[in-house]
Length: 267
Image 1 (cartoon, rainbow, N blue to C red):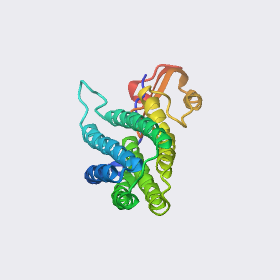
Image 2 (image 1 turned 135 degrees about the vertical axis):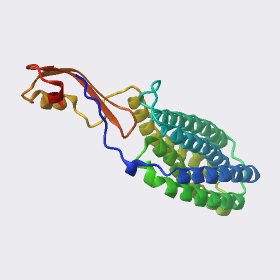
Image 3 (image 1 turned 180 degrees about the vertical axis):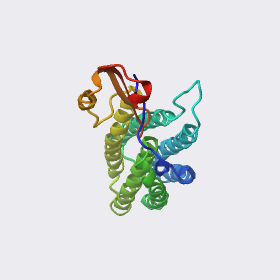
């Protein structure tokens, strides 16, 4: 006998795709502004932030379309529907972010060896603009990030950009008033380390779900003992539990009964 079910996920887990779309537009705009500003000011931190924003824009676009696709109804070909595409999107976004961070590390070490003059005031103006746009995007996505792993991955991209914009503002002030050019690659490295830490959690959870690992916090031995304590059940075996998405759990097992029961009684 197989029992197959999932968590109660109602309208409270509905994602606001309008906020996600607005975040895409905001990040695309700030990416263009930071690329131009970074080239003019000769700031690696600003160009790095622009590249990061470009990655975030891509992440948001993927998250947006993945969410739309995940809402499709199941078919006989895809009996679980399209919900897991959001997990694939979260995994892809995490990998992209890691690649971006590695690139930034390489560029930062080059700047440590060969410091270059930077136009601090231009860097400051662009960073302030980026901070505002990223703050708005992070605010729009924060609520939904608690419900959905795909949105959480996109939110962390944006949150990382919000923090990085703030740090770039501080470094631009130090560069403008004190000509401390080495602060530019140093900030880049610290931001990269922070993002690697945040991305690892998403990467691990995405892989666990795709590998159909037992959901965290679920003890199958306790479930087995609880079921076998029922007077009608002799034993259970072939026990499996897995996440279809980050919020939906499925469970199945084979059950040996102590005596024959009518199908209506098995409920």
